[in-house]
Image 1: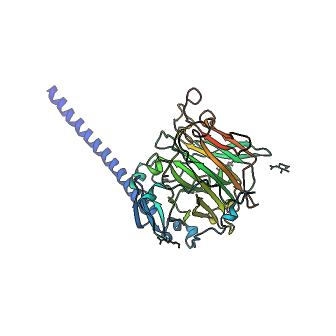
Image 2: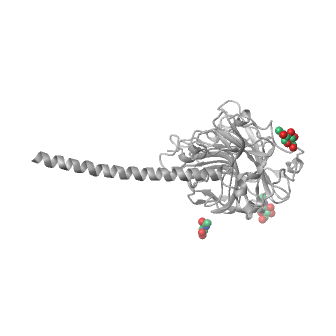
Image 3: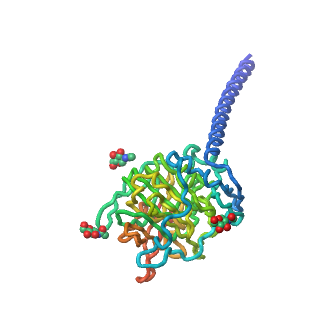
Length: 421
Ligand SMILES: *[C@@H]1O[C@H](CO)[C@@H](O)[C@H](O)[C@H]1NC(C)=O
Ligand SMILES: *[C@@H]1O[C@H](CO)[C@@H](O)[C@H](O)[C@H]1NC(C)=O
Ligand SMILES: *[C@@H]1O[C@H](CO)[C@@H](O)[C@H](O)[C@H]1NC(C)=O
């Protein structure tokens, strides 16, 4: 008799368990299905039909998209936008003060890996295709391609003559050189390319230029440089990027052309692409010249990679930045949800080595320049260097000798014994 009761109870328990399991499975497959649908929808929105597709050896897919069908035109402010193929200002209008040289480029434009596998025809622009796995592995499909929003922290920085309130986005660590100016209409620098270690799939690390305007916690920003960002690109390879926002990243903006804004004109340079060469520890150092400036037609912030104008941000996207930038920064930025935790992430900034290791070891930015209303590029003097986690990442302006211009070094390993734990 006792035996039968137990058996009955077992049956009941098994039945209940099966009901529960079925319910859980149904719920999971529903969310999986929802995610799948969301991903499909998003992919259709982001990726435009290709005239030609290039399969790069590094696994990237580059779509050559009709220049008039590029993502920028999805932006409500750019519905009837007429593409301008070339800047108004030529090279001679973009020279350094006291120099007849147009750019500080030290060699030919550094190539991108995909260019070995083909070229985009005239009338098209190369766009890195967002693939299913990129979206599916991202922390959020809705916010794919945006910086995670965690508020902005106010940093009072004492420049020679005044104090500025610079915003550092929440959960970010910075190592930067900041120019003490008032109005900038351009910035450029030759940026050493490194591929630092990154610990978490949800983190990113950059070497870049920022031009900003606005309150510390609600600023417009145009950014450009290199970055390692697995949650956008699905790998830990260093890539070229541009970024914009009009509200410190709270609701607007994104990387590259993942959301509409940047108008691409070059058929040669792709945003988000990998570099054909990267600096190695104590080996050859590679750098690329990046420039962003407001054209004298006042309608566009052009981005130039090496000698090639890549495209522009129409000034209609911005308010303050439609006139000028009020803050120019050069350096590195690490984002991690665990940046203030102990143990500190082992994610590197720059080359993953402290600035004090200097050339061939630490990451560097050569010849940082700002352009003011004089129309010339100048050294951002006077300046300060700043790091908000000095034990983990550092920043130093250093020249081997007194009579040469210093290089700006920045970076660090993140967690290291006994300083950054
Ligand atoms: C693309 O256009 C440029 C200038 O209009 C021309 O010099 C070049 O030969 C063209 N390239 C191709 C592949 O048609
Ligand atoms: C510092 O302030 C003085 C007086 O206000 C001004 O004349 C000078 O140009 C300022 N220097 C810089 C570098 O802004
Ligand atoms: C920015 O910070 C100020 C206080 O310093 C606050 O009053 C304001 O609401 C903040 N703005 C945004 C957009 O968060």
